[in-house]
Length: 289
Image 1 (cartoon, rainbow, N blue to C red):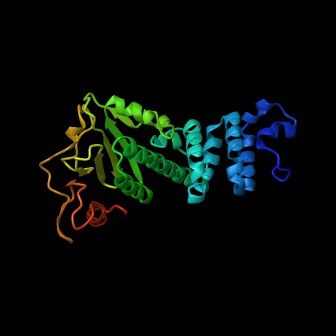
Image 2 (tube, rainbow, N blue to C red):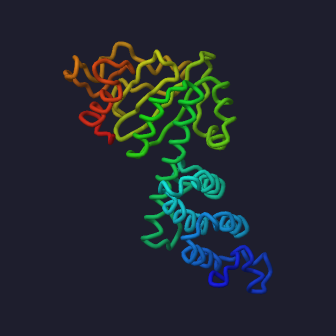
Image 3 (cartoon, rainbow, N blue to C red):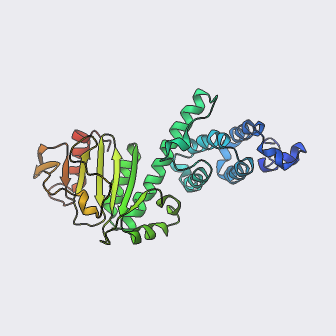
């Protein structure tokens, strides 16, 4: 079929068998082989591959094939395909934040296990980036913070969640790029205060950015006593601890005391705030920048 440039969606006609046979496990390896023969044409083949997966309706095949596609398009030249692939993977396999959705299947090869595990992490990174882009555009419109956190998301394994009022959740859901992912990642708080919190988990840290420009950034260690609980929260203000010291003290171009937990403002001095954050991330947080 590949050599004849035929669509894989028409494989049952090509074999002269009923369309219902497309659900048979046999076709799992057929679709993967077809993909391997046409992977250099992925931008042209992605829709028919997705159509076939819908007809085939087999979670093993979806994981087997989509993991390969995700890893292939995780490059700048294929960025235009990432939203479509994300939606397909989310619909057929599930939210990558739920690791059980992306568990490997019986008799999976070592390569397949590696690909499924890696692709889940990549997919989570894509969704995180979309949320960062949307959050800092809709909730605060801060281009510098958006650029900074997109850079961090590109270099670290991240999971995240957003907390805030219900109307902020609805605003985010109106954005087509992330609408499907909001329900599982946004925790609505009782307070009607127009401030939301974007919480990122990186390494041993819970990192919190707020949608209000006057709120400082907070870093808590996951096993620390001062890490706030997210249970029974009324307002994002309960995530702040004004008694905490600064993460890092500076004077001009020099850095002084540095702490493992604390807060930082987004104010520029002789150094831009991004430079101060990066210094703490590298030298204390063990976070890639």
